Image 1 (cartoon, one colour):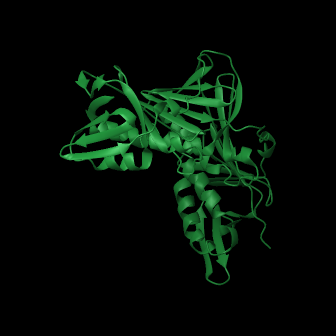
Image 2: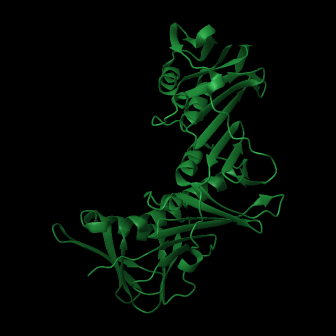
Image 3: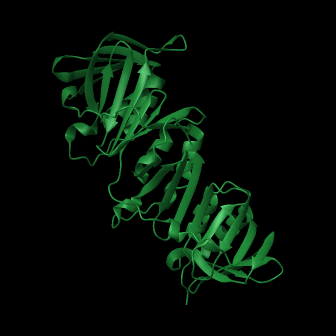
Length: 378
């Protein structure tokens, strides 16, 4: 194999596939990046057997030559060293040449590296996903749906299914739900699809976070193909495979109250900043707890008390308060995460009692909600 290629374009693809490579893998060849050159261009692959990423660089794009492929072939190179080398090479183009017994030379400017490669034939094949069951989402919508849900997945392995985001597709609508059993994030959107298929799968939160980092901003469509145990996201020049989590996701619809005893309308920004300030003292205490109390005249008081350090109180004006007066305590972190995920400038908070889960939505937008369980304070 022998080719030369634009360094910046190549380095970007290396960084993309690197996100799938784990240093903790038990399969030695998976610590490497597979590089394959054909007449069409260069394909880079990284995998940790849970996530696999393939990035393709065409030899020519928009009438610009990106790569000059002198000889086809493939090699697997140690990902950690190779990515550092590519990043630090001196010139705008680099050349890679593979000799017998997988010796690989990387040249750029006056620099030359010799690396021991591995046999590309031993690299596992990527999952074969049949065409058919597919739907499309604009990249910016997909990234928003991930951002607005993935933070609420569980980080504990005691219930592995909760470390993923539940994707349900029915009647042309995609519903994404994440919960760690103390809070829940839900986002739904209409989807462009050719089939009437319905799905109910759980995608690891880690996979979605990595996918979101790699996708370019923009509105180009990403094609999503779901099989029994894999999901494939296909963007321009990029394939992203992830395994699905096994098991049944709990029915969360029962958690979301359909009535409320108290409703607040607040400015999201003001409320977030007040919670942030209250949490300065709450961090030291257990669970980072702040308290919300209604004190009349449309005013809400946010407070936090840490016996060793001191206390903080702040009053926030609400645009409207309807229903019973209430005092409730909750995790400041959960509330701040929820408020950052909501895109409205004004939010509607619905309470059904001091010890019942409460729901936060943007005003006039039913496509997204956040639910938080309160904390008992005695």
